[in-house]
Image (tube, rainbow, N blue to C red; front, side, top):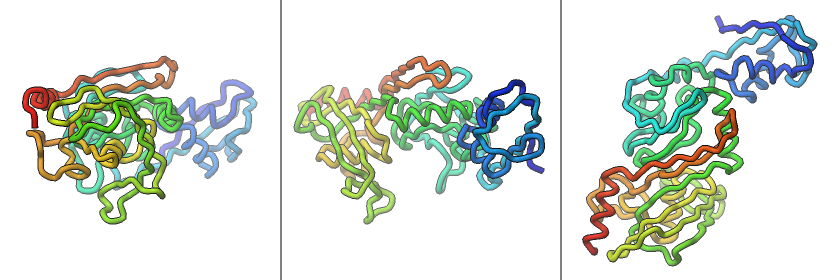
Length: 308
């Protein structure tokens, strides 16, 4: 039997969707609540009404919660995490390379979602995309660094909105096989699924708009360069595609760069080192930094001491 939540309207003048969202903010986003009301999942004194109707006060509201898909259950797993910051709304995690963000094709466990469900059990209460509960944005499996996760539905909704409005600031450090032609630049190249290989993305005219800014941080005698990349959009594999597009693929990226490893590195040299956004409840601007992992620091030292 579907779960129901019943409560009385405390005051006059509040909109139905606003009231229900406030009551169920840990489980449903406002857009989910509006859809639920539209499809008759919320009644007021036994009758369905429109989301924007203002209530008189004293009415009885019954919310019938949707059941999460049975085949999309993700089990909590006690996987160690490096927590950079946490409050009751969200957490910022320094993700290691090799950790998949959420279950998908061929990956059913051992993901970041499994880990955060164990650390933050309240995330399991979200009636939203079970295999991606709490995930606001993603990092590739072999990309390390900062990722923010939502512990409540309202935080998820507001953080997602910040990403859509491009008010989130994300910076990455990438080691490139070649130094770009200019020390500072902006790459504007639409990205779409590669028609020749569906596992890859490619810079294509009919793709979705994608923009990246880069600044050369350090140049090495072997011709390589360490760059800071700021994402202005968030397309799949965007930095990897854009760097390859300008002829400067990322070291260790066997998909978009050199197939044969040029340095002793078993992953791509790409690290999300800075993340800034507004706390979804207080609107305080939060900024975090994550140092390069040891294996990437060692590669930098090799580049400094051993010319190609």
